[in-house]
Every structure is written in C-alpha cells, then in structure tokens.
Image (tube, rainbow, N blue to C red):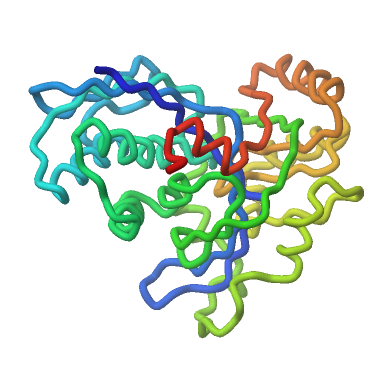
Length: 299
C-alpha cells in the first residue's frame, strides 16, 4: 500500500519579533497561511529501514532530512519498529521561508500514523512537531493561524482568502541564524510576556484582507535581510510596480510574495520575473477545510 499526500507551503502575512526569551529564542507573533504550492510525498511501508528518495539537487536523503527525522521520532515515541520508503517530489524551494521542510515533517507524522497503525493524542502530535521545528505544528492545522512563542504555539483564526499570489525567489541563501543575529537591538530586548498575543491590527487584517487598500503587512525580519540582500528589496519593488497591492518577504526569506487583484495582472508579472531566470510560482490561499480534506484529517 502506498499513501500519497501533498505537503503545502506557507507564507507569513505578518511576523513580529517581540523580544528575546529566557531560553535564547525570540518571542514571535505571526499570522501564518497555507498556500497551494505543494510538494508531494509518497509513503510505502517496508520491512527495512526508513528511506528517503528525492532527485532534487541539494535535498538530503539521509537522516538529516526532516521527513526522515519525523519518521524516526515517531518510531521512537510509539515503539513501532517498522520501515517506510518516502519519495519526495519537491516543488517548494529549500530554505526559502515557505516552510517546505516543516510541511514535509508534519505530513510524515500524519501519514505514518495511518500506515503504522498508531494514533497520537493531539497534545503528543504537537509536542513531537515542535521538536522538529517551530513551523511544524502549524502544518497540523493549515489555513490561517496565529503563531506565538517561537511560532510553534498555534491557534486557528478566521480565514483569509487571496486568489492571486505570486511567489518569487532569486536563489539567494539567507541563513535564519544570521537573520536573527542581525536584528536591531530594540527587537531583541528581553521583555516580560504580559501583552496579549493577538492585536487589533491582526484582527483587522484577518477580517479585511480583500479590502482596498490592503491593511499593511509586516515582517520584522525584513530589515536585516534587505540590508544585506538588496535584490530582495528590488523584487518587492518590482512586484508593486507590476500591480501587486502588497508585497512581503515570507518568514526569514528569501521568497517574496505579491498579492494581485486579477489573474491577468498576475500572469503579466510572472512573465516579467521569468525573463530574469528566477524561480516564481502562482499560488492561492488554502483554507483549513480544504487543507484537512486534502490530507484526510477531517475527522
């Protein structure tokens, strides 16, 4: 039996850095959104070890792959000693701020519960996901969510909908650690966690994404990234000149997304970026209901 599931990408509508935590991480508040760009994962139970197969250059096929780590973690947690071959068809660029590896890990935990005949309590599932990466728990829910803490404590929100998104990545490598090390001092001061995680601005954004003008999107990680990689700033400007009513870097970069009002404007913008030889892809938002239906987790 082979089980094939999509692993959707994400964007961040907002990403705020609220200060440094006692554990050395940063306190975040972010609005996360699943979008239609997706990898494909094929799971085949075996009597052998955990295997990863992927022909995309640069994607590891050893125990460092997040899908492999997820399978190993589930095996150890449940005591199930079974094998699986995981074939990855990659469409989400690696290390691009789109959550591809985290999505792969989350979908692996979902799929292997079925194939290995185990069922985790939601608390245990989220606990394992957070061990694999801050974005992983979000991919158990999908749709529009608020992320707080390291971004791994997630809460479903009223859905945002945008039918015409363009994702652009010029192939710039932006190490996440480097981004956080270069944050301005005012964003890294330790602060007591006394503020509500959900702001009126975020509530307004959640209710009115389709309004004009679009409420301001925000990513506190853009500053240090754009300062060191002006090409990413140029991509933002070009998306705006091409008609996007908003453009923002997703996560820690380096992908930038633009929100367009029509498919015609989106197609014209994609053609222009394609001439540069950069990776770009059309996408739309994926609601929580659609996300759960695609993964078979409605129940």
